[in-house]
Image (cartoon, rainbow, N blue to C red; front, top):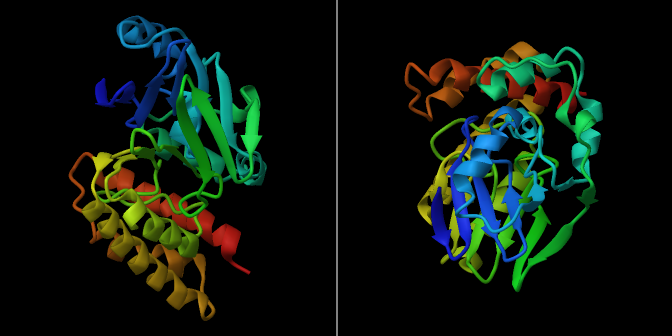
Length: 277
């Protein structure tokens, strides 16, 4: 666990997510869950010296399945965007197992969504502020990378958790994205307001502005490829044929090539289902 600002920690969980812990006198706020249910006990004992009290709130930054899988076993108040409930209802029975297997990274299968087992206690539409002692945690809806996407900002600490909005070194999750709004979100993140911020990506850790600019290039290119198809008649095969060109923007190794390909295949398949008229 790494302290990146006073009482603000980040940690990689076993599913590959970079999660956050914001510590206060009476408890803590988790930005995504640091562990799965079967690891919660060891996580608590291993980090007890760093956390004052039990976690009070868990902020789930979007609906990607590995993120949902992490919330099982939590006993604190879960906060999500209201669209997370809509997205769970919209998942089809055929696409969901693909989502679960590929995004978990460990072949987990489940016929029941974690949100159906552990529905969030708090949902919001545009923004929500939490106060931990005298520290404000501002939660804002940013639907570019995911219709239920949340950014968690600590203005006093100049830290912002942006989930999967910025993935400079791996393919994005495209299933529930809005590419135009994603570019708007990235332009906002690249503005003067955030120049001195530590930007925490859920898979790449702490980033700088050059990596935000790199992500703008990735999303601009993907948007151009998909827009060219959307202007005419196109099939799912036409959309999936874009995968090799998108993959060329990254440098997968033997351990990640299949995962990245499957991520794009599932994402584009779902994107097609939701956007094809």
